[in-house]
Length: 273
Ligand code: KIV
Image (cartoon, rainbow, N blue to C red; front, side, top):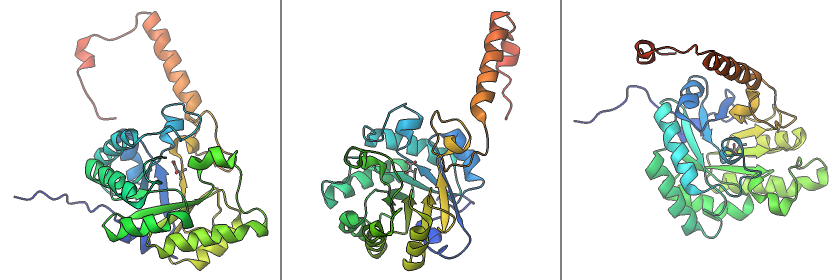
């Protein structure tokens, strides 16, 4: 007997079909519990390699491994059942060759059951994007500021601020779209360029610090909740959870010190929050 969920999860083709349509809502999540919340409101959940910064306190995403991505990807899949889950391919797992990328992407989709992978890079990754999509793995591109290249970029600065620098970024967008990606993240790109790219290519653009000219937006959940220690300037905060969490922990510590904690009759009475 086959057991099928009554709820249909969004797919990469569903997201592709949103070009020039209703804006695509996307957030990161790395855990089952936040995935369940994000799933109610978002079209796409990104298990971003930003988990290296947010969960593990790393300075950059460079040290993030395939195993870290797969572990958190599985948690997010368990917590969600509507949104398309996209898992980032970490630095070093796909750049050497299209075959290396395929083996890493297969591990990600088999072990997490996510619906797509994301990789950084434009024209230089086009052949790899085509190789994966032709073999059944939907790919989301990521151009503009590509954080995995921090060691060659030198700093996290906006891209294409000056019109003279637009051509390579436009070329990257076209190459990724023509290679068969179903959408592309455009990070830290000036509004006129983001608008031009969005008009020029046939797949949805999803901006992060790239303006409302894009077909959708992605943010790091902890940034917009006010939980990350360092938050990029362009991020609008929709919450300020850091201080609320600290106040709750302070209250808890005070209660324990005052010996105010319940016995087992309360501990095992599980209620849904
Ligand atoms: O890793 C991540 O969270 C990302 C987004 C910032 C787009 O790639």
